[in-house]
Each structure stands twice: as C-alpha cells, then as structure tokens.
Amino acid sequence: MRRAIEVRSADEDDLWVVAEMAATHGPETPNGAGADPRRAREHLSVFVSAGGEVLVAHSERGVVGFLLARPLAPQLYATAPSLYIDAILVDPAARRQGVGRALLSAALRQATDDGAEYVYCAPAPGAREVQRFLARVGFAPAAGHRVVSVAALARWLGQEPAAGPTPALRRDGARTRRDATRAAIEDLVARRRRAREAGLPTGPLDLSAVQEQRSTAPSGSGGAVGPTSHVS
Image (cartoon, rainbow, N blue to C red):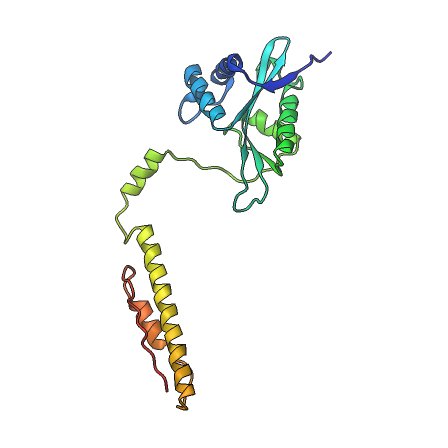
C-alpha cells in the first residue's frame, strides 16, 4: 500500500532538511552551494525572500522530497506569466512512490493560481532520472541555458580592445543623426512648398546631399547634418 504524501510550504525547520538533502543527493552547482548544507540553507533563505516557494513532500518518514519554484512575469515572447521550477528532488529511498507527482501537482496548483500559461524546468546536466520523469509527464525541450559569472564576464569584456564609443554614446549618436536627417528633409519640403507658392518651377527633391552628409557625419556629433538642399 502506497504511503500518503502531504505537500506543503516549507517552514524554518524544513529548510534545514531541504539543505541537507540538496547537499547529500543534489547535483554539483557552479557556486558549490549544493555540497555545503550551510551555504545551501543561506541560498534557500535568499530564494524565499525574493519570492520563491519551497514545497516539501512529507511522509511518515518525514521530508522525502522538495521542489523550488518561482513565478516569472510576462516577457518579450510570453504575454502571460509562467512558473519556473528551479529544482525538484526526491530522496532515493522514497522514489517511485508518487512523491515527484505529488510535488508537481502542488506546483500545478500554484501555476494555476498565478495565472501561469507554462511551467518551465531546467534540470542540472546529467540528471537523467529527472529528465526522464519530466518527459513522462509532458515536459518538452524548450531552450538551453548558458551561464557565466558576472566577474568572469567583466574580465572577458575587459580584455577586448575598445572598438569605438560606448553603447550609450552610439545610441545617442544614432538618435542625433536621425533627428538631424528628419530636420533636413522637413526643411527641403518647406523650401519646395515656398517655391511652388511663389510660382517658381519645382522638381523632385534631391536628397543626395543629405544622404552624403549623413553617411560621413561622425557618430557623436550633434547637428552634423545641415539643411542642405537643391530646389530646381
């Protein structure tokens, strides 16, 4: 007879048990938190304080599994919120007893309450049992994650030679060129209108001078493109 599994939000005592389980049975992590219960406990506190949810599965043996989840707000390619499962782990002695399914059922209720459209999960590399379990319940491959520490990225970018102005300056320069070009075109149109009202012959607008100045203007200059025009 299968033992009854109860899933609820973790309390302070549960978090220590979860930290011990993560250190004992969890995968290695880039920051080493998985190997040290105290560091894992610290990370759990930060996770919860940032809005994450730690669900624990209880049986008559105590805590036999946990699931970490957090809501994701709508993004560029998603108009509805989603639920992201950061980790799911079942004690090896309690596997194949419905613990994982019970944890996912609780996560599903949370996703439904949050109005989430999708549930995401990115198991650690090499976690084949978790991969197979998720595939069985309908999880499909979506996109792979790549991770780098902020310090490592800063070191790498610092080794690159400066190829020009900073991104902010490039954006400001491009905006200045667009504004100056728009002003030049508006001036051309106004001059053509005045010539027509004066009864002078008019022809098609010649934008070659504007285009030439725009292409040769320095990126950081302000107002480099002037209202040069030809009205025939």
